[in-house]
Image (cartoon, rainbow, N blue to C red; front, side, top):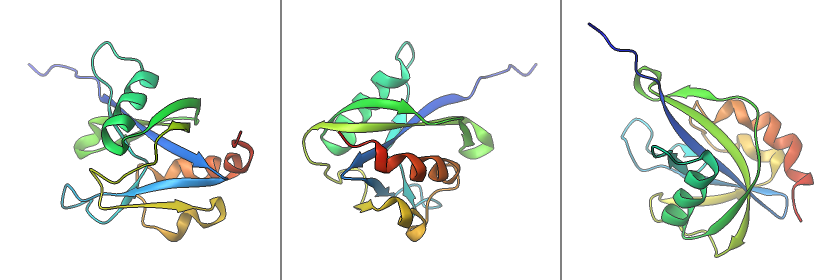
Length: 138
């Protein structure tokens, strides 16, 4: 008898600074290596999406962030759609992003977001983010 398992929620961060958006290049798994994403990770049981994103960026990039707003919708990602990706716009509160789990970081102007090869699950968020990014700086 098969059991219905809800997809695991993963969260990504569109870090915006000076009107530009941070992209991170993956190194693993092999099928994603060399492609770009919004940094983030899995939401632990009992953890809010906001708290997970703050925790993940501290672990992955060594920064402290504040969630500004969530972008519309979510995407089915991963093998068999086992994850549901949600993306938030975040503001840096402390620290400078360092690539510890990625091999490269890049700040992109909203008009040039398509210059990198984004993971398929991240692509649907680019239009909304491009429209919002210039208005999100303090």
